[in-house]
Length: 347
Ligand code: NAD
Ligand code: 572
Ligand code: ZN
Image (cartoon, rainbow, N blue to C red; front, side, top):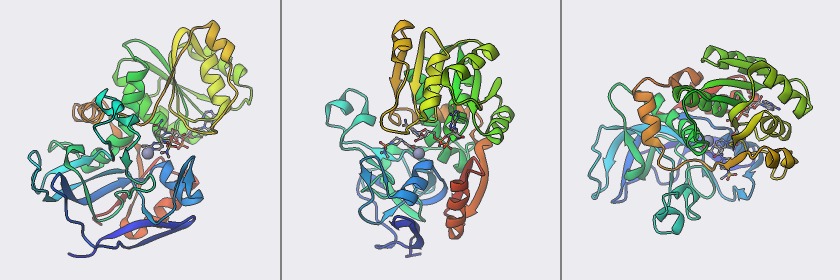
């Protein structure tokens, strides 16, 4: 086959499913070419489609969407040793320069030269054929599905968040927000021996969280962040670790007020660039606040969690569509009806 159909964002609100220029790509010496399987839709894909930008990242030229993906190796570059044609792999979507101080210090997610799928100006992997650095493709064991491989991406965000927050056995964890990212954080925290209370403003998202094993759910209805925190503390006590997965100002306040003195707070959600938050409470309680920017060295750990059965990421998937119906998949994700929506690029 010589054509390569993909989902390309041509301009704000102008997404097309069409043949990509250049046809089927040839791998560079350190790359593999993948016949793509499932690709999950992330909130950032929808955001670029709807607004053409996230913060300082602005779509200035047509860009292929998608960064939660897995596929099967169909060609390998001359220098690639650890993969062969036919291997099924999960794609870690960003690759760094490996020469800067962030990379050399082991925090390659902070590399200023990171090339990350579907973050402008770099194309994503929501297409039939896609080339990627082989070192960032992780071979899946036979019993791990391509769907699970694709979901290692959001799962890696959670592995990174729980590691940064120094999650440990027996802790009480509060997860704010029960979207896909809140849910993966809940799963990783539970796999790490924590009990988890999870919040949302949406009852359907909380019902999903309960079905997936939340120890307690809390429906946020009150706009006052401190009062909401008091209600959460009445339900399940102060949290040792809070993982905020909405980026919403009131939820940030609630998360901080509900964290115990000496506890930790991890900011995963990205919302407004600047917010008001109870900084004196943070000081008086000596709360450790951690920022999160994607992940580094987390794919192997996320894969181990899935391969061992410690987490069940498949339960996140609520809908799937063939590539030709990608627009429907995006519309459904935008509406917030589902949790994780998958597009099958091989269908
Ligand atoms: P999502 O929009 O699907 O989920 C967010 C959830 O928060 C929704 O279910 C929503 O109903 C809920 N919510 C809104 N206001 C709330 C409130 N006041 N209290 C409680 N819940 C509330 O998004 P997602 O895909 O789950 O991603 C969550 C966040 O994580 C986003 O801000 C995203 O940008 C961010 N993110 C950050 C990183 C990172 O590297 N730090 C990586 C991936 C995603
Ligand atoms: O899975 C990676 C990912 N990262 C998100 C959001 C969704 N998915 N982050 C929030 C937005 N930032 S960003 O710096 N950006 C668009 C590059 O604002 C990245 C992390
Ligand atoms: Zn994402």
